Length: 279
Image (cartoon, rainbow, N blue to C red; front, top):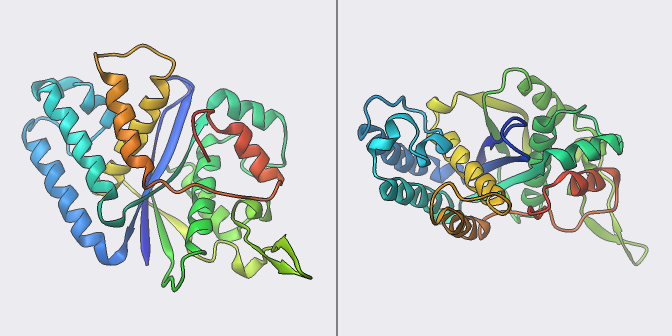
């Protein structure tokens, strides 16, 4: 069994970039991984007792509030170490980066999408499809993947329904190829094998109750800020190179969707993605 902890970064009133990412951990590594992150976070929170035990990465790394009492170089090293620990010993990253402008254009273009105009649901279901695509290809894979999201009271019930009902619209994102009459074809999905590598509901947890959700927040912010800095000025000297270096580290462990059939779902997400994000 595997667990994937998912969070997001970005909002329409903050810019054009929205990133949702999850960190996947094997069940037998979960206790050790959680323990390591708990210790890291506890040690950093102890440096500023007035800060609540919930790492909001944008505030932390930019020295917001009481975090300005922790030297900038120390904060930067902490975030670097956090990213390194996330992908150490087989940690995998799944997710998507959207442009709000591109997402709105994809919505206007139609494509028959089943999630209305919710970028959160679009990103969450894409991430679930990406998990399904990769896990169904793992030989001797045992158990299902449990999806744990940072709590979103309005959208979570809809996401759980989406995973349980498994709308065929998403099939193309995780279809596999096979041979039929000596030709390579895309094998049609059936009701009993849609999202069959994922527990058929999603679970929500408050970020301050889970160090791994806080790590997912950090990963999301790193990707988001890296993309933003490709078109905006640095807030501090060396910021662009710093995030580029972190993304270079993380990219080695980020899973991508790979080849897919040319269907409405793949067309939609190809249009909605940020141009700097490879699906």
